[in-house]
Length: 206
Image 1: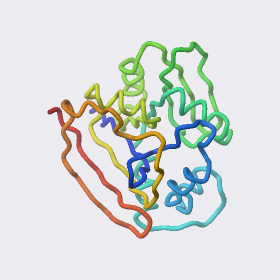
Image 2: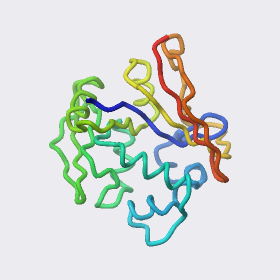
Image 3: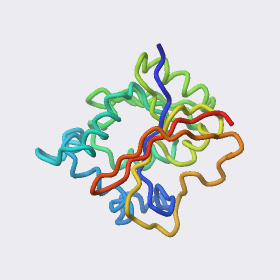
Image 4: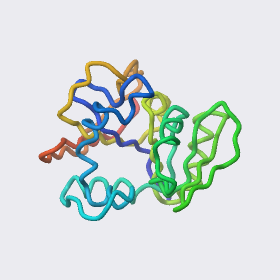
């Protein structure tokens, strides 16, 4: 049985998931947005940031997100940013399908991550990801424009937002120009921790 297609992102209270400028990724605002995840034990182990870390519901959410994912899909902008900052042992440890207009041979990294570059559309990337994931889920890893393409196309089953107590003021909005007439949501779960609020929604056709 095929798994779900989902995305899971951190979002500021004013609706942004990243700064506008690619060079500002990993900057102060982004670090504040993601401040909830870096102390978590599972995340620290996954990115080889050292031993120790917090355990609790935030840690469980991080672990569950990685463990349910059998393949990832991302846009070229996210890949370009990550190629410069991910460790050699990239944290995905699944096949990753990069939606791009460029042709490039697969890029295999230590630890089980292989990037495949797909230049014939989002549906093709998702089809390949589904096959690679088997019974596990496919995560649309980002960035915002890629997530929005899949959401507008009716290809997302579920998503989770970690709502962080941070204001951006400007940047990349998660739902900028979403085709709201085609997307209906059903709240599945809302969980607050001392760092963030985790909101999970099922996506329905309107």
